[in-house]
Amino acid sequence: MLAAAVFGLCPECGAKTLFSGVSRFSEKCDSCGLDYSSYNVGDGPAAFVTMGVGALVIVLAILFDIAARPPFWVHVIIWIPVTVAVTIFSLRVAKGLLLIAEHRRGAGEAGGRDLK
Ligand SMILES: [Zn+2]
Image 1 (cartoon, protein in one colour):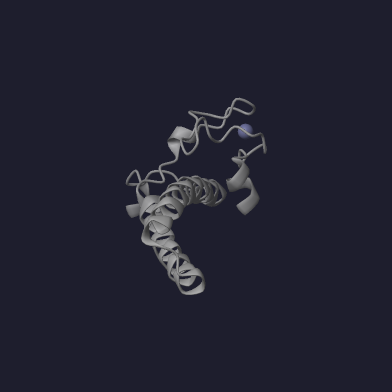
Image 2 (image 1 turned 90 degrees about the horizontal axis):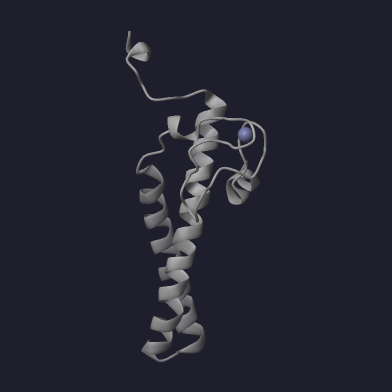
């Protein structure tokens, strides 16, 4: 499941069609026609990723500072690109994981049927 999210594989047929951009979903699978736009992963991934990446980068920055005692500008040129890259990649994986999880559980938008 993690590999499927990392490589952007379709949860139905396994074709590499899940993403059309770096972290944007395609409309539907070109291979089997599964409609990705019917899944709504919302802002959940962004919140998880922001907290997770923030914590990770701070821990790494502190460890690096203790180990190497670099000047401040070294931190700036290292951690800004690292943060951006890790955030984009993590967002892609988190969104993929949520969509695949939704697909496997057969979840869709709550349309009121569940509440009766
Ligand atoms: Zn497919």
